[in-house]
Length: 79
Image (cartoon, rainbow, N blue to C red; front, side, top):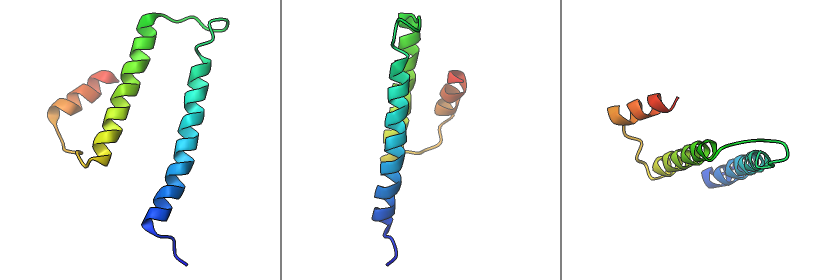
């Protein structure tokens, strides 16, 4: 029987979410002050980027993928 679009979505999302959760755990390992040194500014940059990427993800699922010169400039400045 052929896989439905929803079944395919669930299969792919589960795999990708597991990969992302693993990456978040690895990133969290960087919080060990015994091994690493970081500033509040470093953390703020990390949090801002994560917030930005989550906002972009939500917009894509909401169908708000509209071209904007402002968004292009903001993306360019972030890099």
